[in-house]
Amino acid sequence: MPHLLAAADASYWHVEFLQQCINGLTFGALIALIALGYTMVYGIIGLINFAHGDLFMLGSFFALTLLGLLHLEGAGPAATIGGILLILVLTPLFGAGLNWSVDRVVYKPLRNAPKLAPLVSAIGVSFSFMNIGQLWGGSADRDFPDLIPRKNLLEGLSLPLHLNELQFTLKDLLLVLVVVPTMIGLTILVKRSKLGRAMRATSQDPVAARLMGIPVERVIGATFLIGGGLAGIASVTYGLYINTIQFQMGYKTGLYAFTAAVLGGIGNIPGAVLGGLVIGVVRSLGIGYVSQHWVDALIFGILIVILVFRPTGLLGERAREKV
Image 1: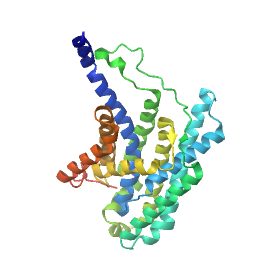
Image 2 (image 1 turned 45 degrees about the vertical axis):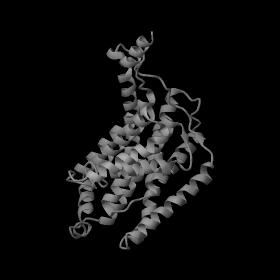
Image 3 (image 1 turned 90 degrees about the vertical axis):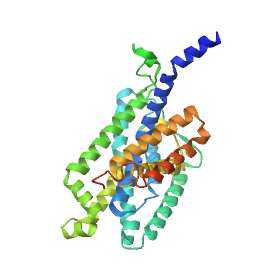
């Protein structure tokens, strides 16, 4: 009898492995959204914006406040979908405006200062945001309304190899529907638009770009606007997906996102996406097969190994265009 149970368990190992990969890819896509904000700002002005993770946290509290004002809990499907779409518009605007304001007030006066000055300023902005988040939402965890049903979309399907045992919920689908078009739109913006060409020129040589008539400061401002908007989108999707937020979440999630940007090759947009997905999968497999307590050690151990052999990250050298 034991050998029959063992055989049954063995026949499902690929289902468990695929489930961990799905979980990792969805979480990694969320991390990639935040990582793009880090990599874009670094690519343009060479600044590691440590406040970006806490900007993401403030966006989550802003989205939670909007949810309360709109009274979406218990509302009908049409009102819920309309409310979520409205929040997906307003929260990125909040993040973009706040990120742009920080650049104009804090980072712009330090544009020609030694690199340590804006770096320390970014750390100061990070702590300021964290304290604002604590005042806004309190010290305890806050429940984010569970507006998206956890219905398994694969349930009832006739799939081979027990694949119908996999869980792919409406929440996962929401994440894919938000993250994938956002990344495609960002890629088109950077590669095809006039602003994208100006961003690439500024990232390569700001002085030459200014001599060619490119409004470098306006381009930098647009970069902060886009990065803040991406953080706002990530804030809403994180809240709807995880359903718990707190004022310190920007530190841990931002650290994952910054690591993803470095892992993929900081300053490189495809690299940030790849880095986010790799970290998401490693984190999920680590939780599933090792232990949650060892996940961070596993992620940063892999980061160290990769950087030893590829100091510029996975795509750092191969990327011909960066922002």
